[in-house]
Image (tube, rainbow, N blue to C red; front, side, top):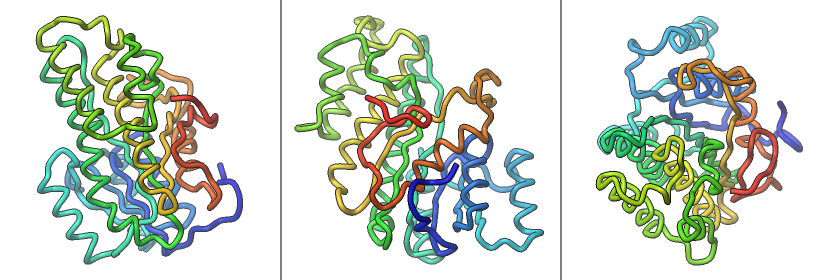
Length: 282
């Protein structure tokens, strides 16, 4: 799926993609590389431990002598890994034009530990990486694109408390501290097994992590107005290992929805949420 308007990117355009080991993240890497961009593909595992499809993709790029596909290990939940990645970027590319945040942490209502891990990955890890890369994104001559790969589960309609919905949906007065407050309250309620009727009924940790990420994306869009476009996107119900191969879209189709937002033209939107191809409410 082509972006609206003229192609503003080239072989010098640098895209960092997290979660590139499999599924949608890997396909986003493939599609951006096929369009000629320089793709920094990242995953938590070292290259020799990547999935077979990811290793095949890198091997094919190497055999074709495609210098626009580069792999680097990155665990967004580990501060040292993020710092090492930042140091490497300084030496290798110097700037970033596109950041596609796709990293997945599970999490269920039954386990406090898995819920915390989910939030640490989906929200805090993504925020820490994004903020670490802001100096690189600010150097983009095209107005950088930051894509928060979200989920339909992150829609605020699933949060059952009106006050919490309002806190995450407001624009004026929204701060990272307020988002932190919502997440801390969720974890407290989960640990005490009280007041869970306020939170999403299904996959509450995953849902609230994505709702919070959407809120952060809106906040960042305001802060980076004129510097970068920041949007959230639900790629669709995609058949991947993460979804136990359920869904009606292939990873190729899901990735197309992400790439479309990453390559919006210079007059594209910012601070929006897309459900597949459709501009949607949060």
